[in-house]
Image 1 (cartoon, rainbow, N blue to C red):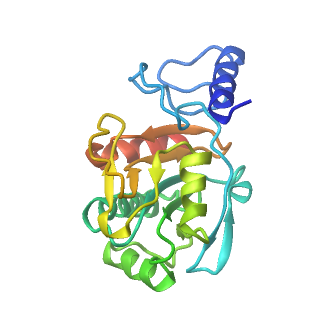
Image 2 (cartoon, rainbow, N blue to C red; image 1 turned 135 degrees about the vertical axis):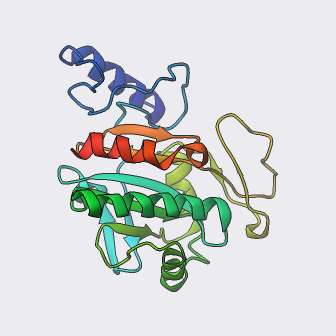
Length: 231
């Protein structure tokens, strides 16, 4: 069965087989209620869909990060960046930093991982990623923030686009370009394209939120969702 068909089938089965929904809350697999938008049928996971597995190197810790090790233990927020993208990707890392700060203040720092995967590993070595994280005031020694670096750009795009279903392509790294689910006009044939997006995944490995308009999403909304998942 095709991955995207499988995701839809699993999500539908989970809803059909769950207990009666508590108003304002999720079902037996989720903590949050479904998002208000119901006409959105993207290729990537949304509320109630299983998140695809991954095993990617954390170059700062020099160890592999595996979703199988996170599942059953912690929830996570994941987004996708490259360090030569200053403004928009920097905003994504800053959002993770804001959540990290709240986690320390509210005492859930051990219940949530914050993951930023680069799809430009040729440029983004450990030194570049560390400098990028420090620029946006991430606590890189706290143990709950990780940069993920696939071995090659092809591996990165293969997982992000092929496994996760977030549109992303390779091209001339000097002409990076981006879009979102409501705007396909920014893509250029020679430009890498990825959508600015962030996923909130619960401790069961089930997607709670796919923030497809993440650059317009208030940090307070993300924090409220995270607290609803880890609380």
